[in-house]
Length: 321
Image 1: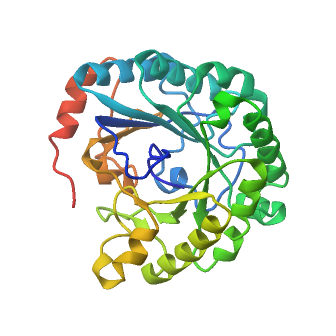
Image 2: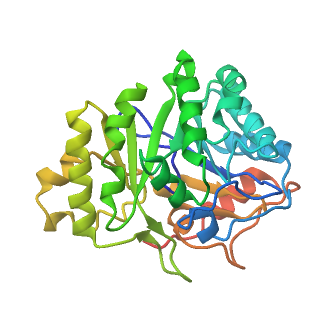
Image 3: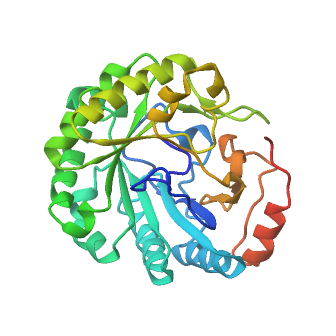
């Protein structure tokens, strides 16, 4: 999955003006799937204790909005539509709508169907449903749960029937090293569903210690696989975009034919230093530090603290290039 996932927009060329807030919301029972590549697990963001309340997240958003313009809000997980997580998701979507800030969330889709009526009233900017194959057995094996694909498929079919949600839907997929074949059927699957937008992320590995993480696998092979997927997507008129938020896939663009790289429409954050990620324990990371695990020195926001002062302090800390 992507680290921020706030960029599931209609055009990769559109930049986001202002800071981006991205959140992990708690679940007392953990996620309902068991994805071995889970970014949240890699970052050690797991928290089954509800350290922050829904109103705390709202206070953080309001405080951040007082400090400066907000360009986007995105809820990452664990799984925002789980029964004990949805109260958080509702509050964040509601305050985003009230403030007029594009607010999105990433979901594995297993609980999407039951929440369609409520979500249609909250009008999220984007609903990014994560699927890693058009084959149910392959997807379920990758996600560690039988029935995950069928549940997500049912949720997508229902959501597509609601105009306000159909406009918000985008499907995201993780490109695993050496497993591009898993995704070759996705454009056909999306075309049949009537969903025209597809975001593909190369598998992200979180760094160790002070090292930044990045895509797993050989870069040239990743680009070759992405070009193959793009050709299939173009054939079926599916708008495919490659998500490379922090530019970790782009270090050696000059080593390849730039026309090929540009053909992929790779999305990158124009101002990655303006991204803040808050997790249920109150730990908050900024910019490329999101590609590192939570550790003892990661700043912690407490609900009693002034949000503007906290973010100002966080913004003054130099980031690793």
